[in-house]
Amino acid sequence: MKKLIEIKNLSVRYDDHLVLKNVNLSIDEFDFLGVIGPNGGGKSTLVKAIMKIIKPSEGEILYHIPFSKVGYLPQINQIDHRFPIKVIDVVRSGKADILTRNPFKKNKEEIRQAEELLEDMGIANLKDKSIGGLSGGQLQRVFLCRSLIKNPSLLVLDEPDAFVDNRFESLLYEQLKKLNKKMAILLISHDIGTIAFYVKNIACVNVNVFYHQGNKISQEQLDDYDCPLKLISHGKIPHTVLKFHE
Image 1 (cartoon, rainbow, N blue to C red):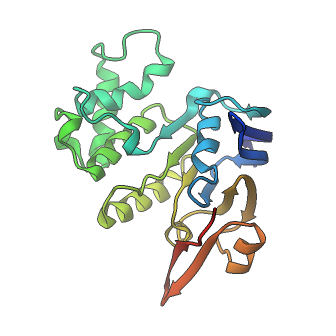
Image 2: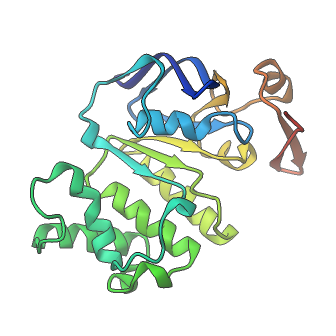
């Protein structure tokens, strides 16, 4: 299997605080990696290092694909909803990092691609609406379209199921399952019970990163990985809650 990204001996510090320590992890083509762990354990920091938003203190990340082929969906609470921009232009702006011209200049092919993505997500009717008037689920779908417009080989999502309703959450995971046939996915989630139905492999991030091959994981394995999550099962559907941690 072709490696898309290799993370080698990666450590990240914020001032004197060690957030990630000696991380070694590979992401292969068509993988679907679920990343779990406690709040403050370093999940988002790992993603930001992959996306070159922050620089590692030690180690390196090797990209075996052009960086422009990595799509990114950040947490929607990091987005300024008041910015006066239309949905269609948000989607088109996903190509801004690989263009040398103004991304908002009229381009028929880009507009067509953006409209097709919005149609696939069931929100084509919102294309001329300002993002300030969207619900959490609608906004998440718009930014998912933005991350897909450059046809990525790897899609990175930072808690896309946060701040959205249960109906959109189910639609999102079904959409990701289809997308995984065309690209690798790295998904951060707080809920192993949900993602276990969709991901292929699991990594627990709690300063260190522990990789678990396969999507079935037991409470004993979580404890062995020093990952403070409690796995609770109700009938056929597992759920998780966070154990107390410092």
